[in-house]
Length: 149
Image (cartoon, rainbow, N blue to C red):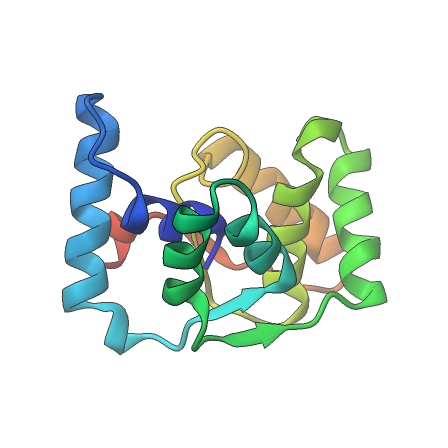
């Protein structure tokens, strides 16, 4: 599970209709479908949850506290670097490349996210899958909660 999921679960309802819809879908998925999956996070999710307003950070940490942690191994670093070196993601999206690499290296089936700019993007996902194969890893299916209903 990537950071945007817990963000949508804990943030105030958005006035943006699309984001508000994503928030609602995320909450419904969380209540109705979360139990059908083993959810994993990484230290990156913890670090991002702890950032910002202390009260909001506490609420975000409550969401992620019980999930198993996936290690950020040297293999994760190599794969994330390869994803960035390909140019498919900008350097500023290094954390996004790491989320993908963590899921791939640990054999996670799905990477759940609402980051449709750098992660849940069909063009990027196809290129990432090719890079993962070059390094003998299988890319996770990158999807939104809506796709896992």
